[in-house]
Image 1 (spheres, rainbow, N blue to C red):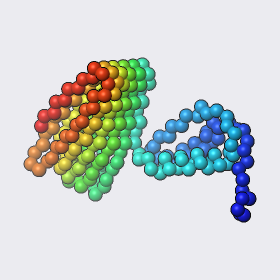
Image 2 (cartoon, one colour):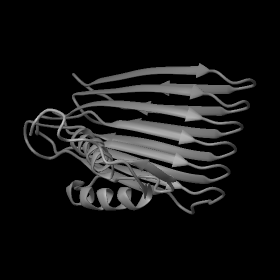
Image 3 (cartoon, one colour):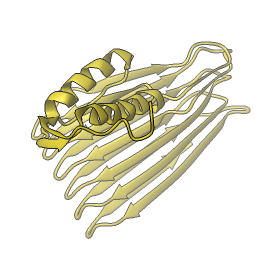
Image 4 (spheres, rainbow, N blue to C red):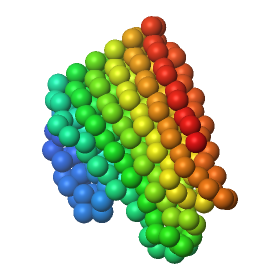
Length: 231
């Protein structure tokens, strides 16, 4: 192709139609991951070929570099009866896992979740989960993690939390297994009147290490936090 021979062909077209086709072709490569794209896009004047290539490149990178994980969204005003349980297992010898769990509780909603991390006894495995909790205005969430790693298991749990106005969060942490288990917990009380209660309990023996690192950032006005961790 000679220099300057390829020029953009500008035309008016519906961007949401192009996005729908491109997103549809990308879904087959997602595996267990989830892809969300807002298709409410206005008409544009551009070269549709170039736009299609640009969107495809963005989606390809998102698919390639986003880890497998779970997304749980509680819609606005919905109160979920009973706990939602997520069981995360690392079972293969000498393996390393990076599961991602995202929980979004929308305005005025309420839910209870329990996440269990486990591995077989005698297996040298490691888990480094990334957990994201977003509790919107006036929403309520009860979230408990239970660590049941085997005697040779390693767990480094990165957990980030953000609360909106008048949002409430009850956090529970139970540590029972693992050779080394760390909770790296960061909480942002961003909304005015938001509050969090954290209760943690661990049982270790011999060479087991239970490592808890908690940072609570009071950003909004009239926020409150209570932290109790005992081993």
